[in-house]
Amino acid sequence: MSSIPRPEEIQDNPDSYVGLDAAGAERLARERGWSAVRSLPPGAIITMEYRSGRLNFEVTGGRVTRCWKG
View: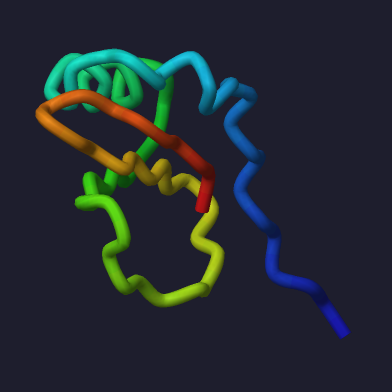
């Protein structure tokens, strides 16, 4: 049985985005190789599936307050 190759995980620290303005953080994430960037309000209901290449931002008042991969 052959396995499906997984894309390499981007080596980036999500904590480095906390405190940045949302637009600048998204621009920086794309420069660093993230194919999908998702901005969410605090407490947003989201699906729990992990998606390689996606970075999630929780944004309050235009600033990233939390960031995680997947």
